[in-house]
Length: 87
Image 1: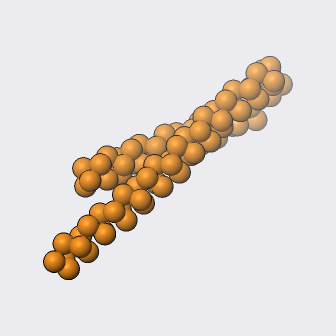
Image 2 (image 1 turned 60 degrees about the horizontal axis):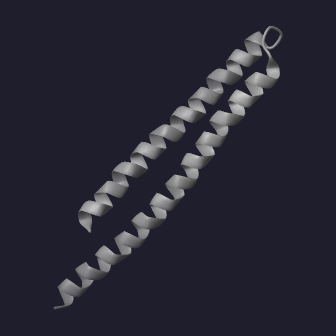
């Protein structure tokens, strides 16, 4: 169970990094739009920002599920440790 918990921690960290990249990219795209709005196809830029934002939301939902699984596993580990201590 501890190995699985460590896997959840690693996956959580990876998802946090990926979400951060999405946010950074959105900032870069917004800056690009603010500098080039008159010379780019704004609807395409909007589609790109929306796609990156949607990807970030999907990753955030995945992170939520990982954190839930991790919390449940943490509860099980603590319960087992408590049972071992009581015997």
